[in-house]
Length: 318
Image (cartoon, rainbow, N blue to C red; front, side, top):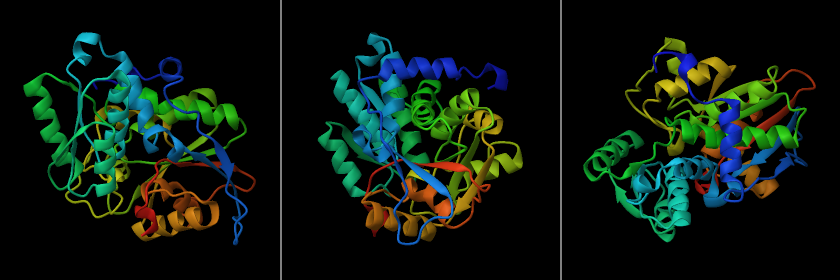
């Protein structure tokens, strides 16, 4: 991107995405994070995107992208790389459109997600150790075959689709003061923050990354995109080595702060969500709650918080 002003993602484009995908994805519920054996010192509400079609918010962006593609480009099917959830969103979108989908996965993807992709009718190809490796292979195949490539986070249509989460949160909880959002490549928080800040400028948007994959945290600190030398987290959906210019620009403009949590803290949060609230979420989906439980993010007295529980899974229960 040559200029942040040129970024096409706006409140209006996110609202257009919401109209486009209506009826194809779910308006997911919100619940209070209580009662708990050890009550929280803050007012915390959970946005349950783990109940979204395909098991995560990714169905929003993938469906919006598919619906913006011309029929000639869509006819050959979709191709992408994923840590699991984006692939499921793309497979679901392709299934709706009755076109083929090919999903490249890194070898650290949980086997259950690969099997779920096959059940949605997708072709699954395991390649590389982390998402970046799988993505390079997927892009090469897309260039060779001419099939439509769907980027998991660096595509305006995908970001707009993810941003529809914020429209639902603010419709259902207009007095929310803080949104806590886990960060992988940055598409989700970029879309959510763009919509949320346009609708309620005083609202805080807090990002959460693992200590073992601080991709956007380090990029903001450096003032440029940073490529991590290594990934050291089991939360594979939060673990690209590098984000993209469009995501960094939107995050720089709209996100107030990024905090880091450990795998152990995400695991503890996921176990709490399961044993006390009956929510089976993956490690990444517990990151926002972990930031609250550990005090990595400390809210002002009386603030109303909303944490996004972004994906279903069982790795958070291991």
